[in-house]
Amino acid sequence: MFSTNVYSYINVLNKAADASWLREETIANNIANANTPFYKRKDVDFESTLRTELGNMKYQTLDSKVEHANLSNLNVSTYVDAANYSYRIDKNNVDIDTENVELASEQIRYNALTDSITQEFSRLKSVIK
Image (cartoon, rainbow, N blue to C red; front, side, top):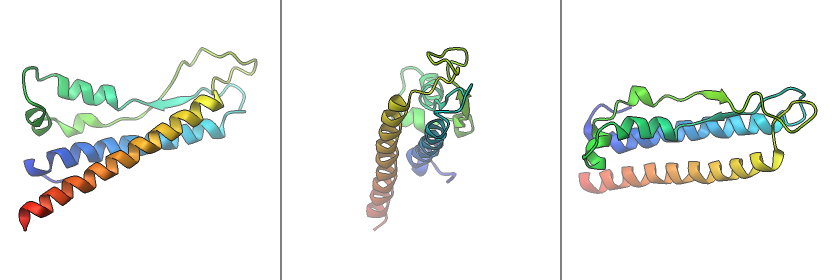
């Protein structure tokens, strides 16, 4: 990570891309365990972590919020989703169709994030010229 405020958006986008990558891996793991008895699906929730960090500063612009965001609070990890809830006899709660849709959605999000990072660097490069 960079320590100057010029890279604030890039640092937040980087954290979001890392979280998106982790969510893709988690969803792929859910798909791999779709037929494992008693397996409970896992998920990653970066959006609420980001919303909490940015939402604490009311009546400020997004630029100001991102500039003052504490990036160390933007770490995410996996959690077990609906651990005691399952329609299946084997107590596995993975719905393969839902997981495939979530995986496709997450791949689109990851590509958008990496494109945004590339665009931010292009803007910086054009300013430096």
